[in-house]
Amino acid sequence: MTEPENPYSELTQTACCLSIRSTHLSNPNPCFLLLLISKQRNLIHQGHRPSKSQPNTTRTINPPRTIKTRFLIISDTHGIEFPPGSPPLPRADVAIHCGDLTDSSTLKEYQASIRLLRTINAPLKLIIAGGHDWTLDPCIFSQKIAEGIRRFDPAEVKEAFGEYGDARRLIDESGDLTFLDEGNHEFVLANGAVLKVFASPYTPSLGGDWGFSNTPSGAQNHTFPISQGTDVVITHGPPLGLYDMTHDRRRAGCPELFAAVERARPRLHCFGHIHEGWGAKLVAWRDQQPSSSSSANSSGNEGKASHFTHIDNERSIPIDRLPSSSKTRKRHPTTSTPKQKEEEEEARKCRTTSHCTSDDDANPLVFGEKKL
Image (cartoon, rainbow, N blue to C red; front, side, top):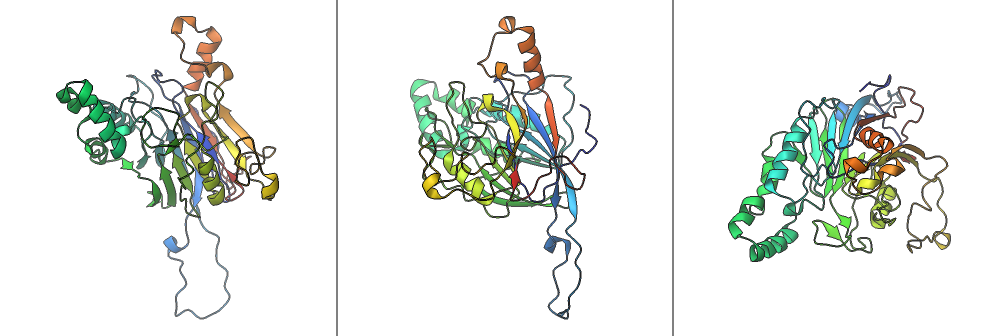
């Protein structure tokens, strides 16, 4: 694809929400987003810490150096691989997979996902688990394997899913993939930037025995402890109100996740899970929040941060989303209209967006005021 004139987006004082995923489970080409941003490198990491022996004099300190950084974001590949002859994806400084590496959590599907991720040209590749990756969740693993052994040949169950820890071992021994457990992480990138990341695979339960699920009421017992100053939040599921609408018009996002992201206000939040919610948006936070007495919303979360009360929709900018006619369940190829086929083909392509202040982009990120 053609690169934009300003192929980088700068992270300075903004935050963003990205929902990137495969549009259909059967898609041979999952959807990707190439986010081009620049990251201010911490002065301490540049060796600018004042010396204790230095005289107490006033001096001018140059502003932090910005380092342009490319993020390639992918999610919900479900064990598929690129078809032979597919063009390579654009190079990135950081590649992120937001979970659901597999469909049935078999070892063969993990191996397929590892092969797919190895084709991506990025020095740092960060991945998290999703609900389909239940062999990475010890509680669900024990439950489902015990059930499988009762119903099927134990040898076949072991061959398909292995022992607990085998799937994680495949990822850890792949050589160039970094699997993130829930928590806060920090990386010094190959380009010199310092990147602070929070990761979590947990999503509200939509029914069934999926991995890393919380209660249907919205994970009230899950706090998502995102550190202040976090640059990127990687979750499998969406926050409530952002790209979380399901086929049957239900919002599947997590209100506790929204509140945690609002408190931390990272530069970038990327997630997957709800395939039909594919899209990207530059979200502007409200400068002043309404009082708790006036912040009730239709979800019943009175007094809590919500997409109704804490997002300034007039200043927020949609970047891309799946065409409405493509948000239906999978159609047979012979029943799709030419327009639907064109939209579905377009949805498989890699999207590129740039939000750099130093490059005079039209919609730059501003840390604490906006998020992608």
